[in-house]
Length: 175
Length: 160
Image 1 (tube, rainbow over the protein chains, first blue to last red):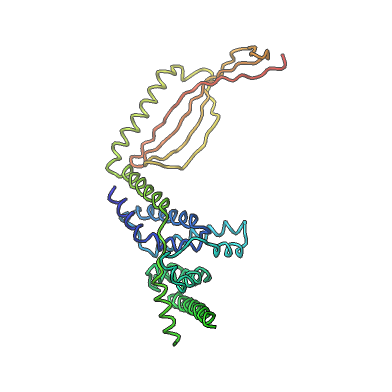
Image 2 (cartoon, each protein chain N blue to C red; image 1 turned 30 degrees about the vertical axis):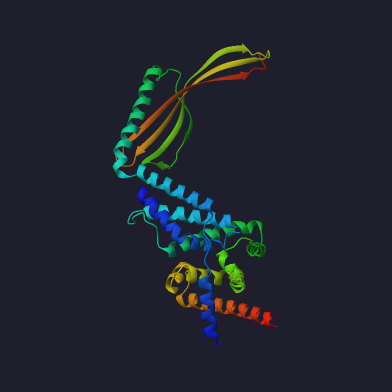
């Protein structure tokens, strides 16, 4: 069984960062997101031990779904105490980085990072799953229970918004 | 620049950004979790179940034997009284917990005493037997675990 533990550790090393990035959409802090991820991974472990599965790490779309479900439940609880708007402001108040600090030297990359964080939830989750999760639109559509066309159009719309934001900054810089 | 080119540029820029890793603390916690879970699945592996049965049966036999040694008057003329009973559906290690009850075997009035504060109290000795029924899911055998205990109550007396 030590072998199984190692397989999961390797799987976490490979996929942990992209799953954490996705979890951050719901966790107010990095620690919250890490807790959410750990909870999802624990659920996945038990799920994978069931009959017909071999106990090995699951496919990513399933983990994204589980994180999302956990995140939604977390938000539902949060809603009782705070309004959604306050939560979003908090979400944008992250001081620690979501993305590789090395890229911060590139002003445009930094801007893009903030722009991704500022996308609305529906757009951001598609961008994260597509860009860093490596999921296809079909897989994203299964995860979010939407049609592949909707997933694709959300992704395109998100890119347009990001492009517009970058363009605006470039314009301001040259003005 | 065309719109499609702009979108392609954005896609490329996004791919240059990499998500940050889990904190060292979180990573350690999850590694420990995997180790614990892997060890846990070892315990519940079918090949270990026979050992588990032997252990549980030995424990049950020891408790039942202890009852016979220490409670020779189990069928007391004081009459048995069931004071607590609840059922639970929890299960662990392939065993199903069916019921739990506290059975009062004996209630003995040991008379009046004066405590250190000078107050009168009535001393009552109660012998209780805690009974638990556990079912082995694999074999269907139901085991009753019996744990006797004695309690003494000091009831304040204000009127004579």
